[in-house]
Image (tube, rainbow, N blue to C red; front, side, top):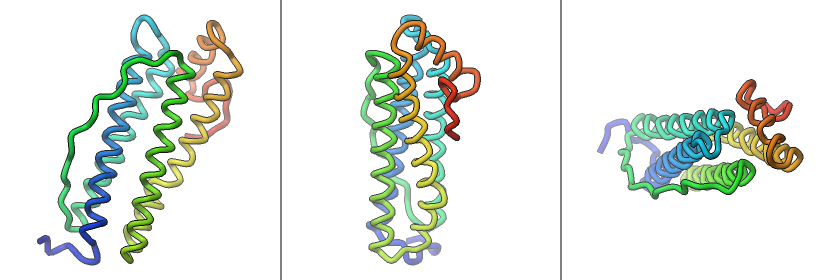
Length: 179
């Protein structure tokens, strides 16, 4: 038992380990989406760049949780990840999948917060709120805007122009959403 461990229950520790796995799984899915968008049959450099950055961000989230669990005197236990999908029907389908992924990660974070609260751990609640929750809401909004934009531009040239704008300034077709 770590000398640093105080007011940090086994239930909270297990939930953080599960969240680490969730973040790493999301990173792997985004990496697969990035590879799909980069493939010569898809050739969407804006989406490739967006998904690659999202993969890096999810890995960073996992690392922050690993650092946090260690700070609290817990032990990180990594689990095997599932192989992600490798094909999407369209840019819109890929962005819709990313939107659902972010909603799932957010739901998992809200559950983690609930566990921390139920176990009387205000420090863990504060960490989750400050580190993750606002960022998740912003990411969900941005992806929802991207789906709306892709619905608007249709297929073909519209997607090409939208993707070029996404590559250039990471906002798709002129969105003012912040990242």
